[in-house]
Image 1 (cartoon, rainbow, N blue to C red):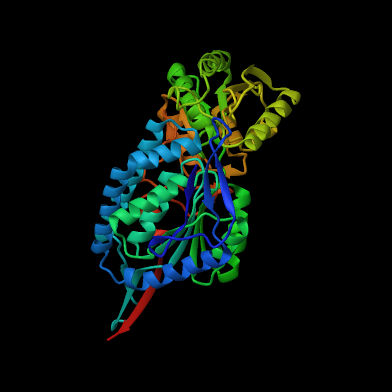
Image 2: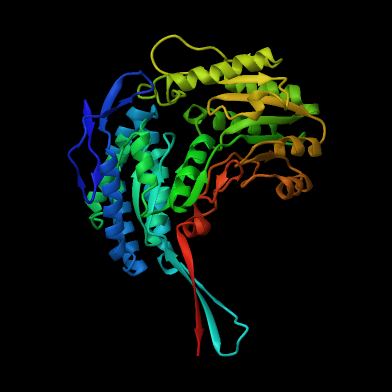
Length: 474
């Protein structure tokens, strides 16, 4: 069985505690790896190592930091098979998808390396004739990066690469569900010969995570996770007024207008909902369909949802894989049962399959209402509830009548409808005639309870900076 050790101050360290974190293959339920749980002392020492390394790292010209990031991207490419193999086992993804995730992680690393010559300050006019106002962009210091289970390799570099190019150092806490791939990334960091202490990777329990995040030298905490986890991070930030950057829950609405290409929309919505068993923050979570095409569109959704087969993707890559845990499956199934009790119609799916692994079938629920739990709460699984609407204004009102505002989708051929939704949707993203895909040159940021700050692009990189105003009298 695989045994992973934590990576701190440039080396894999011997465990100081007997605590081992068990990692399960969600397709079989079997324990496939163990990871040494970092003690609170080890978490604090990793922050100290990162803080020491940051003194020299921040002084490097940005182009030299970029050179290290390009080396790291090359190492990620070279290590992609090993990273992918580890990720596939711990996540239930196919080896091809998991390996591609490592390749995408290299791509976003190269993208952020190119910001080296583009981190700009400002010259601001002064009210005095003999004075200059110069605004500098500076690194924050040590950043704690808290990584989710669903896309742990890509999200690792989505956070680490912009933090590094801006001159910060990092301590990364991977999800305890998917830590082995993070330690394969640590091997790529070794291979790239990044300076000691610039990137540290430690698996840990909640007590050690709190010690990490409340260390006085941690200047920023970036998290992709649940709203509950985001609230906990905000509590951590209060200790030292650390900066939070939070990507939290999502409940992506898809509005289907009568003039939409219904076949295309149905096919793409089902693909979005069943990719990684619906465990994406931007996966379609609720569908609003114009009443004149409602029955036809539900029939198309049912056709495509019913055709989705699930199973172990290590044996057949075309299958839909498992949920992360049995607890997740039980929670999702309970939501489906409550929706049916509240009046929803089960079109397909909705049963807990027998056998090993944490599988759940693609599930379609028609005749849902806006006030139902299944519409208001994130499922994070392959569940698609459908609501009928009459006018676009009504659909937009229901789409906005929500605690979340991460992503949104509209299918229409009418540019007036597209502009109405583009100007009125209460979400950080709108995708017109396609499903979400988070382009890394964009800005992935949520409204409402979907988060604070954001990832990707120029604005995502600038999250990892702070400003200094220099007022120069002459």
